[in-house]
Image 1 (tube, rainbow, N blue to C red):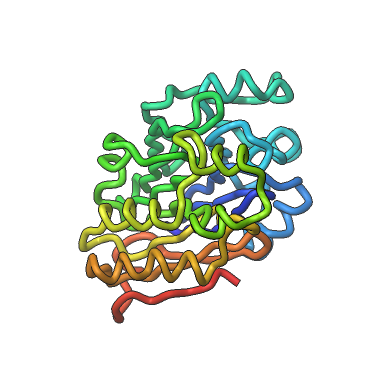
Image 2 (cartoon, helix red, strand yellow):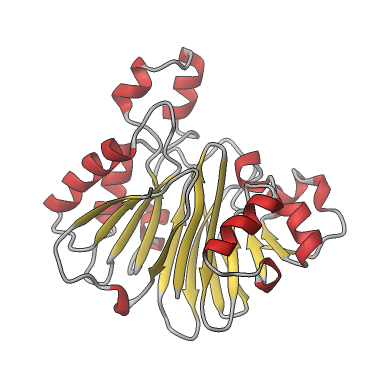
Length: 272
């Protein structure tokens, strides 16, 4: 299984996963023309995608969902709560899943896990290739990591996790106190320190890639996020690759599974 981050941040999010037999997106927070251009970097025709899995209804995750599904015939996978907030999905082919459930789409087994965010039934997604057994977790837009989510992150080969903000930069940044409180609250976003803690608790011998996603353009930098999370991972003896995703550039392919095990200790990479 291969993973590409087509872009991740407050202006749009989309993650591509593919095997020899199937392709899916997790979120489509870009206009179809942008999605098509970024998919071309991965040499993927949009019409070859089986489904788009939508984590929640915020614009930076659903902006292109309806138009792309109509244009290229994608199936939409979401919770009923997310579907209710997206009336432009009317008459589009949709698979509704509870926030804690599983569904099979092509070669992928999808496990959905509830997360805490200020949206209607938001979820994280654990994707397993049925043919290969490789596992990737996509976890962003959440205010804190629960025990049930940590259990779901067990035995992953690749983890995409939110590292939205540096706490000091947020306090000193341009956002008003009310927005700062929302971001750092229980239903907001994970800080670099939160991401470091969750990622460190998810380490096992098979976890060989961690991607930091949804970095704030105002309250974080890739170097800051990589530094904070990387320090924690070194202490936890992580021996894989740590990458910061970019809002404007595609990163990948990242191979998911035993073939992607790097030969060296912790490697840091800017997603630019």
